[in-house]
Image (cartoon, rainbow, N blue to C red; front, side, top):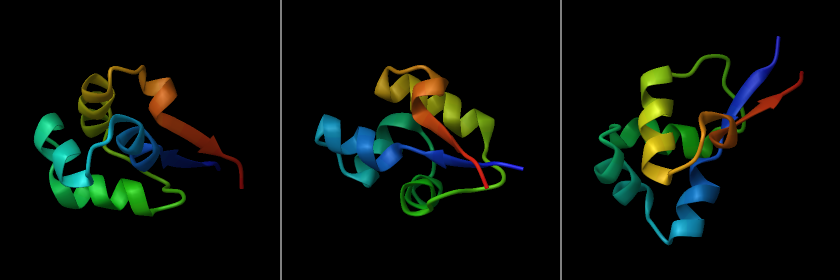
Length: 70
């Protein structure tokens, strides 16, 4: 089974936003945003949070996540 890496940190840096700003702009709680930014891979993610983050960054979900092969 593969893991998912959410590219929150990279996209936030491109926009010049802090993780706190990402949280405020997206409506995704800060602890979730921080967790996505710090973890190199997760077995499960919240699709609703991914959808909100993708809209906030104005990217497709496919551009927000990376599938990491184990």
